[in-house]
Image 1: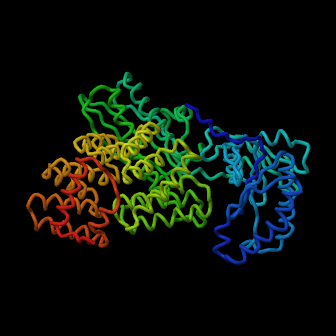
Image 2 (image 1 turned 30 degrees about the horizontal axis):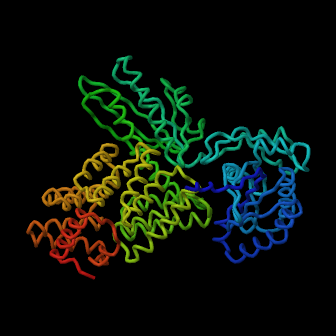
Length: 596
């Protein structure tokens, strides 16, 4: 057998220049046509010639900016200095509200090369350096600075170590000094200038041991450390390391001051108290800007094995805190006059979490599309936009199910080629596969998501859904119960409870199905699919009036739902699944759901 050769990936060491227009959204809001015309002219007459003169190439345009590649760091910086100076001259008389100014970031990195794009950590760092540059300024990495020192007609000030979004380790950065400045004073200005805390930035302060028993300190510290680790696994989060956090142990601290010192938006703290045979955990999430408490929770548990208890406590806290942080970030974004891509992503996620209805999903789509208009290559915005299509299809809110699922699959595969360890993308791909008669492959994707994020409760629930689609409905309940153990108050728990109801119908346990559907409705009354499931179960139990009322409740939420739509995609082909589906469809007809 001839072994296939591995696909050859072209790589090379390059100087990467990333640039965008500062305040682009505000400029477009002020005057779209004028901004577009002025930007096009500056690119054609100033930027492109400078890059070509210094032997660079424009890799791609990004709407409000561009990505360029050079074989030399010196040439990259010289090109940037040249076009920044000329743009300043050409726009110096423009009013502030219409003046165009670029921010530039430059890094050296080993990149993956494709015909019309480049990828890699080196590219990501250049983009993040651009985001911290001043309008009209240039920000370079330490590796670039070492190559250009004394070789370019510009001075650079040391910005120190910078923690950049989605970059694992701090990057030492240097900023071009403004006209008339000097390195010493400019360095002081840059380092003393207030820097906005990153999105989703939090410190977990050491939990307080209220038991009066010093021997319990190890358990309390273990909860603090594990919670710090688990929160840091959340994509987009910026979590202060435990060694820094533990310097605040035992101190009466002003949380606003801690926020300023650590440059974080939120503080999570709490206490643990052992009282005879019970353990009580209190937790608080505080906004460091205002000092206000955003969320507080408490739960009591009978004392068992402490390590087992830690494994139960930490995921609950991490999942609950994650949901609260998303809500807090969304509220902040509502009051942001010029939201960036991350602001819009959080607003979209908040709309998504408000309920899986046509209205909330449509609003979520708007935010994710706006985020991509600002940052076209944003992986999270891309994945969440696919989530809208996957969800709308999998809960039968739309008619063109097959087309939407096929589109989402293409988008997710591309996203995973750039971010192979994205748990949510793997989960969504799993759901797509399940709903296109590939439940076994879908199960594997959900299991991969769980490997990447051990607290991913939704992955447990979707594994249960895969078992139902494979005709193994008797196994679904156990997986959903594991999801509920990890996140008992999850805002999407109603979506997990629904598959158990359908799995009970699959095995003929109609009374149990009613119970699960009612539990889902208690969590969220605005989820159409669960009402239709309840209608089918009640009809099969010989309760036509109750079944008809449940169907009417579902149709009030989704007037477009029909049996034809429910049959329009091929989900499973096992004998058990097909027989269960026939029972469900029979129940829907008996409940008066239109055929369509």
